[in-house]
Length: 203
Image (tube, rainbow, N blue to C red; front, side, top):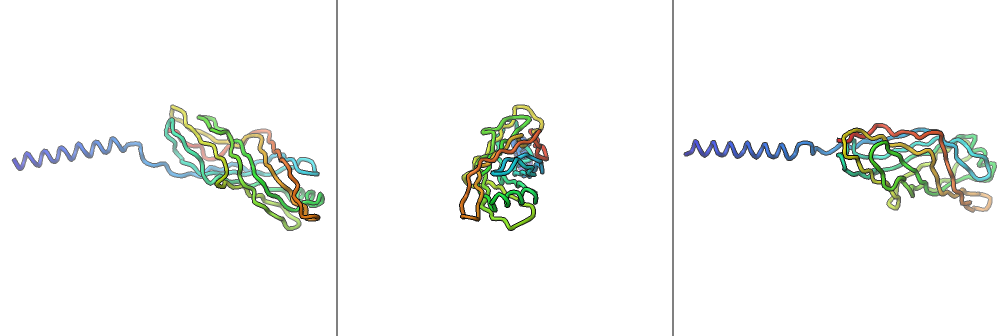
């Protein structure tokens, strides 16, 4: 009987271990990846001066692997918009020395779907700039931002995220002459979208 008991215990243990292995296969948590795009040149509208070239970057954190039919919402969405020293000089000549507002950034995918299709309400904090030189405008997700949720397709593969060809921002430009803020809707366009790297894996 002791020998039979030991044999039964071994069988039960083996079956249990096998069951656990089957149940946990493929469920390892995905690693977090940082997806980055740009810098990409966009032609952006400004108050009092003609459209100018702005170098745009964007990034977000998300899983490197997404299960088929799974969903994920990116985090730490952020970016920059860099204005050249020449554009800065033109804005200074037009009487502006600062900026604040929010940005709306449409996102594209080549596999699966996004809802909604853009990241909106990204904050551009108030910044008053020293005279001269290039300007880097920071853009960041806040608690009030709306971030799209990605839904993977039903088949394994890859997905590449991208910046759309048209971006927009609800801005205010500061005038030091009377300490006022001028509302401005900025529209930025590019001839083609810019892909984020790396691509995500759907499995």
